[in-house]
Amino acid sequence: MVAGRILRAFGTLTVAATLSAQTASVAEYRIKAVFLFNFVHFVQWPPGAFANDRAPLVICVIGRDPFGEALDQTVAGESVEQRSIVVRRAAGPEAIDACHLLFVSNSEKGRLRKVLQAVDRSAPVLTVSDIDGFVDGGGTIGFFLDRNRVRFEIDPSRAQRHGLKLSSQLLGLGRIRDSGSSGGGP
Image (cartoon, rainbow, N blue to C red; front, side, top):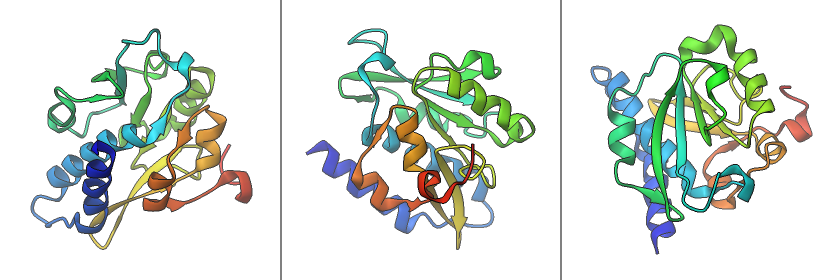
């Protein structure tokens, strides 16, 4: 079963993604690219999130792209629920309407509120970032390093408010930060 294979790989990344000091940045973003690819397998978007049955699932990066070619290479030729996966770079908050997953680069820290407000006005979008305090600031999934391992925290209430359904398997792998019960973030 494809989902089982993906879940095993996803769990392996969560447990074994140790970074060396020399290649930390490159390795870190390769790992994060794989996480983004795996996230789309454990999120259900509402039917209206896509223009039609054959429309691709779009992963966008807003701001300075830290992935280089890693994200494009990770999703090349891949699909989720018979939808191809494409990567786009968004120049600014006004360009995120066609995104299903939006990675917010650290370069956008100064205008994070504006980016998240644009997401609130657009179609269902899963927001992901490695900006410190991203989930508390209104994002859905935030990466962090724990003993040189890439980990993530999730706000399931925020995902639900955006019309997204997160798999219990995904929730079981991340640290839960629920704004619905803790009052965190906008």
